[in-house]
Length: 321
Image (tube, rainbow, N blue to C red):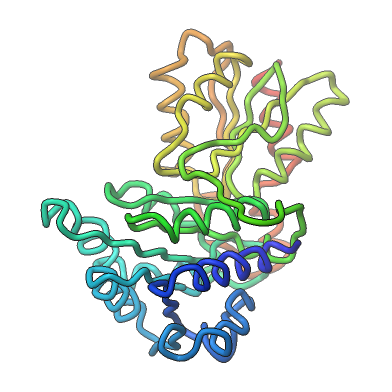
């Protein structure tokens, strides 16, 4: 099943299961969403539950917060994560804090889906990876699925969660295919997955970088290096036990993500490893991230800008030398 079909199935199943689930966003109705993830939902569930909105991210998230506070379970689509700055006040100061500020009397079961990532020559205003912004805010859960099975299972879990959950989808994954378990399929929020067992180094990779890390592990196996690839799947709350357990086993850590390095999620991973597994480390922790520049529009420059399997393998060889 394609990644985008898994998203569509998750939303369809949850809207059929619970009439309180509604969908809000720009072009989510008749057009079926920017990448087709909501195609057909307007015809199936009607205009009361599937609503195209004005081009105002602040209005979309604000309406979802109000709806959730009054008993509905909104799914919001923010076309590109680069646009989230326009509704950041609603996300940070309302969505993330209302449950706490009202003494737990208000629940906000809002799912905010958004698209991230470079590689489609969409330019610097449509290609950023800003997940670290959201992870920094208490009151928000953040998931970043890398496979069709995980995006379906995590999205369904997010829709059923009584807290705000941000689902970060890398748009280069929408056309990828993978096995999705038949029937009811839920993936628990907060649990990492070991994508490949290894004994010499742990590679923690996010979203699309999981696939690049697996390619790197294949390359490294020819050099006699056994790399373990860990996919956190949920960035907040993070599965710290899985991370520390893997580092304790391998003694080395490389982190790969598509967001910029300074204050990125890799810095948090490195800090956790330093605090909880320092005595296990046999080499300094390495991060593989893009240059600290906006995402280039030029296709050859964008390709050079992105982390890939070769860059991950080179970092692993350094820590294993």
